[in-house]
Image 1 (cartoon, helix red, strand yellow):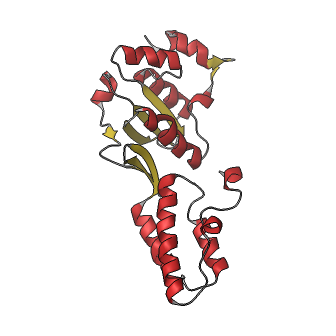
Image 2 (image 1 turned 180 degrees about the vertical axis):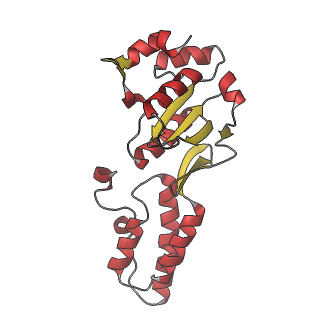
Image 3 (image 1 turned 180 degrees about the horizontal axis):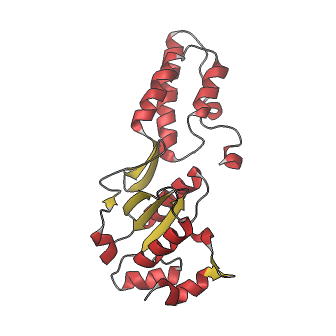
Length: 217
């Protein structure tokens, strides 16, 4: 069944135009959250990421992909697919980039393509990684980027508390457990150097996240 002849199509179309709020994401924070929390946490462990070339009609690409993979935004429809042993595919687009997420089950189009698995390969997005640790989704600052951050933080460890606090707050606006764990370990390393030098320790509550981060991201 094609997209234009399915009940789903008529559910998504309003005033002649497909409602894009089902799959369009307008910020990095929402992109990370949807992938890790909304889908990976619920078994969407397979993924494929692509970039749409400049000049392409984005809405047309959206509709083609949705039709090709039989993407459903209806929970009951997805439940029926799972009951048949078939995989569901989710489509999300952030700017020119899109990701396809699939759960377990058979899916002809997914099996044709080069989908990776979060259990084996972390996803890298704009300085962050999404993977699975201790059987839970884990969002972290990418290792290479965090090594640079750590190197600089230890370099300025003996500077004023205000400068250090501001820097630690600027590492990431996001408060995922994996990121907080990275910042906590860095925080301990910085305070260890300050203690050796006889300087006042930093306070974790002040350093762990920027003020008003929820409003901005």
